[in-house]
Image 1 (tube, rainbow, N blue to C red):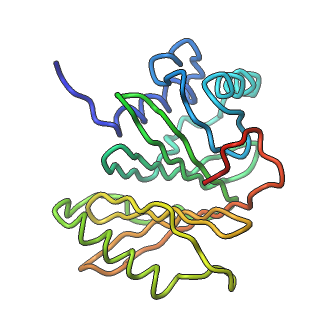
Image 2: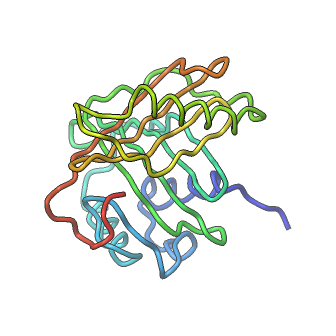
Image 3: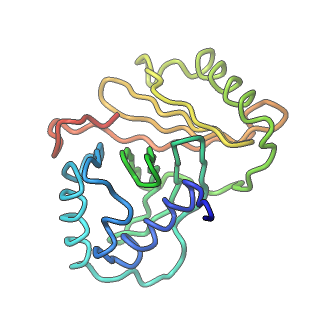
Length: 207
């Protein structure tokens, strides 16, 4: 039996559920225990299904451009960095998924209008994944320990080769920082930051 990578599972789910708006395959990709952290979607499989049904009511995108700019897979975690044209706006999105038994078990995200997604995307230096994650952890601690004067709490660091993503938060926002490394140093940096609303459609928090 051929195995499929977690990254391939996430990309297939994105294509079928979001791109094709095919809600009939939701059981293929989500378990009943699915946990949602998004600021705009209710918890569980039922919450995502409701959001997808609402999406069906919107006009299909005029462009067939693939919104996925870069991806990172690290064990059970997969990150997508997307450039989305939606309702006349350009929005940068970071989606982070935790997979379990080949299905999407948990989801976090953040969106920011007009945040840059341009730049490198090719994953190289897979043998340097661990050392690059360590380098970014040190860099964040030494150089990016605060955001607008407020301390940053790091929750997860995931990496694949020359790309590392840091999931962090302050008291009022979530922050996703993506780094491309070269020779063990940050060579490119992207950030998606979203304020945490006063009320969420679930009790899971955004982080």
